[in-house]
Image (cartoon, rainbow, N blue to C red; front, side, top):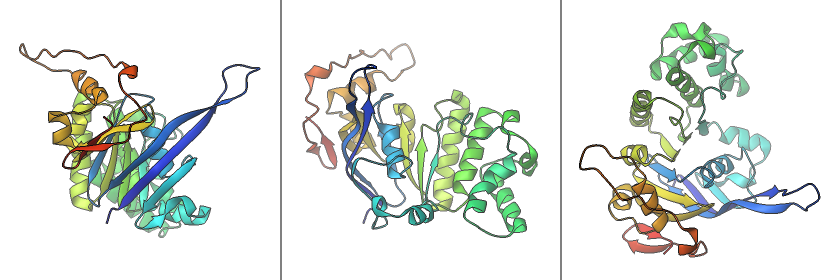
Length: 292
């Protein structure tokens, strides 16, 4: 049984084109379905504006979906009351894209990491302090960081703080929303390796949202490709890279930088009219589906 199931998820926003024009609906997430097994790292990829982040936020109800179903450990997440959803978030957490804006610059690191424990009434002050030190060590930071502010830390260190905060309540499921896109390449590798190590040590399940296919290939077992709010291809990562079936997936892969004198690759231009966004996913190989 899957740990998380997303079925026919839809999110519409109202878009106003002018002062005197009526608002029109913009479907940012359009009939998205997938499931994630316990212990799996499932990738959700696509360009900016494809609906990846909105999908992740709808799963956690940081924004409310317009329709569809989200099931976590057999429970209907969208039917939970506010109090029940707060309890569910002990199991489901998110690491945000920007470590610069996701941390309160006025708060000390120790307070930032302790905050989820305070909100959920976990432990005494001494127990929370011990847990904060344990979490900092878990993400590779020194105990002395507790009294520092986010502005005193590097981007990679800030993202580690965000990860420590997300892990404070011992979640089993973590959404990593472009967790390294704002970091230097050398620091990206460190954070990705840390995510892999934490998954092994803590038995975590990841939804890894990204636009960088190189990272996805390194960390994800399965991948779904999003375009204009819809999943256009989904399957095992190795299969998707070796035999992409959808023209948008092929264009994304063609845009991945390659290095070396023999590494020239033909660039492909996505021509939206060349494919029908209304097509359902169909199986093109074992476990591999595409809207073709």
